[in-house]
Amino acid sequence: MSSNLELEVSEIGCQIEKKKDLKEVHKLLSLMIDKLKNAGEEEVTEKVREYAVGNIVSGIGKCRDFYKEWVEGKTNPTDEYLDDVERLVKWILDDVLSKFSEKDFPSILGEDYFSSAKESLKTIEEKIREEKAYRMYLYNDDKDRPSDGAKNNSSLLDEQIRNFQSQINVLKQEIKQNPKSLTIQQKEQKIEDLKLKIKEKENKRSQLPKKSNFPTGLVVGGGIVIAVLLLVIIFLVKKNSK
Image (cartoon, rainbow, N blue to C red):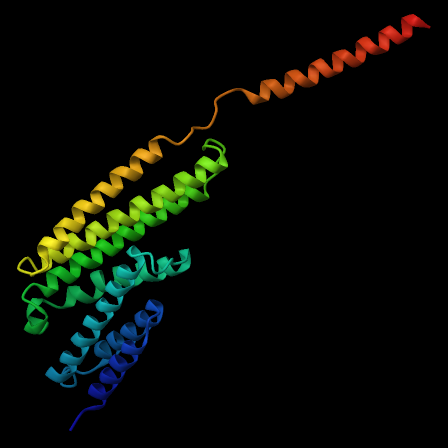
């Protein structure tokens, strides 16, 4: 007969499967971990632990799915959502996986699932850090940046380059996880194609016009001075003619 804890952990797993929002996934996994912490030693049976590991695997899978959609350009997360994902990834790495080892995960997932899962989460974490830094750059005062047209083109090229590089990182990770895959040559070729695309975009970016260093302030200021002098001259000429 199933214990209450088994049923609760199993039900949490069912709910996780239905969720796509990683903030909700985080809440459910946190609820599960709290239940395990508060349970008696005799309550945490092998079945409970099996369900718990399955839920963690599901949560990691949700993170990987998000990352894949992101690098493929199928989703554009808000700053707030990136914060939610970053918190979940960091929590899984620091507070969850630290309590488990490779032997806790079923062999059907692969001999190196535990290590590869941690590596993929670290990749997501790094990608989020890069994205935040990039967005911070865009949000900063742009007084020293190129003109609007060039700036927009530069931003677009930067985004394309980062997208291509992210795809390369995903393919490399897949090759590392499954080096005997029948599609490994196709993936390696895809990586080379993406590298060429990056080089092409970098060349285009280098050809964009830069912001002019001409001192426009001096021109405006000089024009005002000239206008004032002209008014003074006209005033004096009219005065003398009377």
